[in-house]
Image (cartoon, rainbow, N blue to C red; front, side):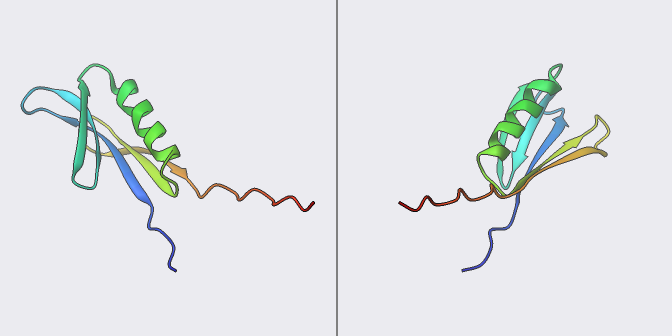
Length: 82
């Protein structure tokens, strides 16, 4: 069984049909009000935490990558021996 490829959640600014920030992953997208990049970033972080391994890629207004936040595989819990 192979390892899962990390999902990338991109926080990007889009201008059509109106200016807003979006979280994009695969062919999916979720839009937020243009003035609130923090809300889109928080949503991307929450989605990435629940879908490990993954990564949040935050883009600036001009499209350049500002930051990348990796979410690695959760460490497995040690099994208790009774």
